Length: 563
Image (cartoon, rainbow, N blue to C red; front, side, top):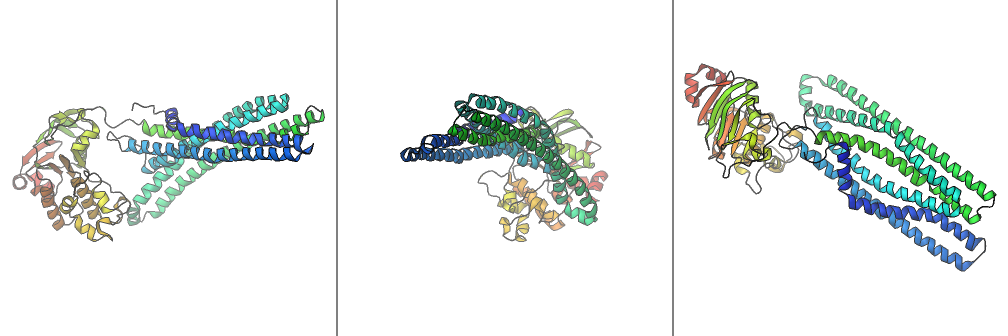
């Protein structure tokens, strides 16, 4: 990827993308902090000029000024916080989109070694933490202004007090940054454990039917309990580090304020400052813990954001399964597919031409070889030897997104998503296309009849409310509705009954008229509806003929499809 996908790059983009709101929020927050600092000064002035020497008119005038300052600080807090929150939410939203876009990228690879729950955790909690840095930055800048304003006002009242604050505040900030380092490491470990626990939970929920069928609930619960306990312990360690950092900072801040009060008291006793100045100094001393504690909180938020940014960066920078390719498919696409000397894993020297508009069946006696063939066609991997061409162009030269817009490989384990049946069918369909022909071809009308709401009925996460055969039909309808120039389908009817399978075989042929279709299957009903069948045995093509001829003349083929 061209953009900086390091942890720092993630934070930089999150902040830079919301620069306007961060600047606006910081300015308004600075106005709020300045107003907060002015309040004790104004009260001191009121004491000196309207209370020590009673003056009703002056008192009224100063009270009006005080009211204006209160209005200013209230406005600044209200709208500054709004701008900061907007910046945080917008940045988190953009990061979620970046993560999801990378996970769904045609060149793949981001999901390798990461369970779905872990990716969800990165796209939600980690994105939220990095986005929250915008709010922390907004409040932090305002807090710096508050500390500086308080110091300047203290300098006007007393140079020693002002210098004490100017020297002490940066020291406190440096200590806060140093104390936040353990929290950063603990926070990263916490997120890793939480992501792992989410992944285990997602896997267990997805396989709950299988677990119940095997009566393995106790083992599953034990596995999740162990993972959850590890996540809890990491969370406790992170909370302990955060509490320690917060407690130490509060202790240091309290000691600092006590020192300011002590110095101020000695100055009052020596007569260096008057009663009003004393009130102002005490008020400013009480005010300063606020912005200083905000700066400590900002340090903790930065530590958490760094840890989360590193996790997001790992996903964004994950190497793709395939690389290269910028060409576009031929226009108009004819749908000719050629394999020249294809060799990869168990496949060896596959030479095959699928003619435009042909309805081809492929029978592979080894399921591993079938998987390898499908992965090569989908460019989930590139072959060790030979090449694959689409309309005369090697697929390695085509941009991954462009390749998938022309060639669709619908694998046997294709997943459905939570939503309506119709949404699942039309997920990859061209805009405005009529999904009914695809649904009729895959016999999805029978599935819709069993759902409350018909095609608008929800099918649950991964189609959990459907049977295995119903899920296969919906997945097949989705592949047909995509209307690609070349469609490769792997075993789409293994869980349906014979009568429905025969209907689907005819339906696919009808729906794909004029379009190149490859069926990798051992279903006699589907193979009987093809123009010809290719048999791959031992990694090479050993026979090629219509289905009826192969059943009659080829023992290996007969065994593969009829037993």
